[in-house]
Image (cartoon, rainbow, N blue to C red):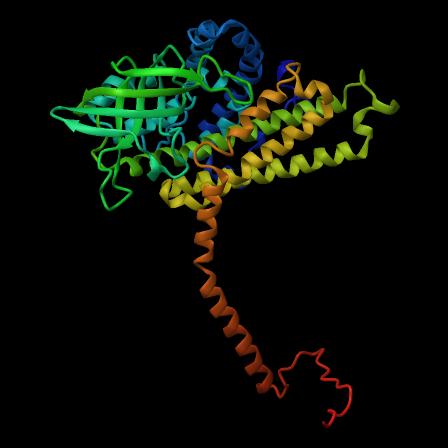
Length: 470
């Protein structure tokens, strides 16, 4: 057995053996075998390649956002030979994928989340995954031929442009980019930022959300989604945005403006006014993907923490770290929190498989809030175990924390999901009040039926004496 796969005191316990019991009935034998291949590919090929990828990117800003590390293409060849390609497209909604369910891919995504290069190496990297789902589900035959096919083959990359710097984009109805019909074309004007993937030199297509009917009384019918080729005249990528100092090159997150950008009317996706329908269909599964990758990150952080606790080269106060009770408590809490979060995500994935993203809104929102917070907590504990090393480049933990923190913002910030969850839960409030009042009334009636005065059993009615006379 490869030393790169050792993960327990007994050697290697395979990924398929660790699938939670609640999920096993929903996982095919083929998916179990593929899951083990994903684990082996990530642990033996991708994680060791992460450092090579980082070094191949370059030094200057110009170099970093014009590079394409060869290690990625070499890993893609290996992944395709293993059949690890496009696993993310769920079989009950798409014919273009590898034939797995959301649940089955969710289990695989956990392992992809442990490596910087693994998702791209298997053609399962954001934002391409969500963009491919959009075109596969809503695109015309011509759009699929021109853009979906090369994306599925991993020949090009894409970006999703929704967020804008001048408005509160957590409320998508605030989006201001204009998309105006002009003959057989649409003309786009406006500004976008946090356009993930736009820095990659292989990014050839932008999926853009804007307004075609800003005065429509139905604020959810104002938006549309259109496909914009990257080399269309009038587009300026001004700068890339850092995340806690990390630039995420060559992928990156761009600040871009559109000035009279003209694209064919045939580039409209699904039709005018369908923007909200499309982005909801896109973001739901994407949130599950993010959540499972985040669980993989948390597992990796716990692995690094355990490694530090058992490193006999560093013994504070004369004892190894695992001899200090506070550290073992942090390990135990991390194990509980990761396992609980995983079950919540798998439940959401099963719910999507049995209905669709719209039918799993509650479950998706729950994990979108729960998992990033859990991930940050576990990573923070691992950082604390390493001390100065934990916040430096000597471990991957600082970078993981920066990535993990963004998950509380992307695809809808915590506050949006919590507000909607709270509103929906509160809709049940009146029913609960009526039921509880009815149960109390019935309890009192039962007391009288059995000859019992329905008083509090601790009732005293003790008085201090006669009421004084004035």
